[in-house]
Image 1 (cartoon, rainbow, N blue to C red):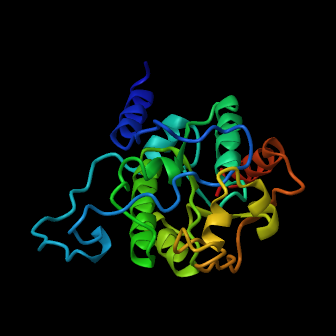
Image 2 (tube, one colour; image 1 turned 135 degrees about the vertical axis):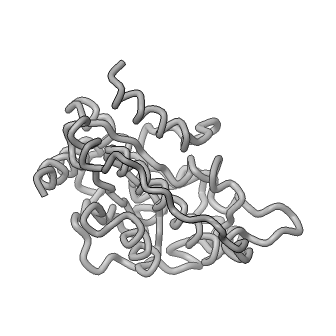
Length: 248
């Protein structure tokens, strides 16, 4: 195994998430885990816990990102997919991953549902926890970009200020904001777990699009209308966008 491939695999393993009980990828669907993750009883959400005093400093490695990019033969980017639950983010993300792998590109999907089984399992869906969720995912994406990978993030990330935070963490030159768009009525109709109905009945609090806001991106790099595109068609469009950014 080439050393750069082994290094990238090691990075991925460091941030691997538990994929047990994740939903099937047979079509556009809403997250079955919405609203289930909560901090342990009696504890503060991580985003509200004061950080300990930091006595550390950053250690700079000897190998820059550009060197890893030469080894992988690609420019590392993060595609940040945002949209309503059941708009098609996860389905599109995994279709794009398969497309890029077929092209010989090293990539990884950071799916919001999967991460809530692992590194973000102690977070709920309050505005503060959502922001911490996004911060953690952005930090992971940045590290994976530093390793030379193309990162595909699938996260509702409803607020522009939080997506801007992710852009700042990852770097504006590496961050592509992708709006996965579908009307609310279509998302509700796709919902196999009836989460939208539960949200409208008041059974699920802070549900984006119903009892919590969703802010459409001001100037996304790409808009994909999943009512008129299949997942494979959407993936091909994004693969073309990635190719156009490889010389930037």
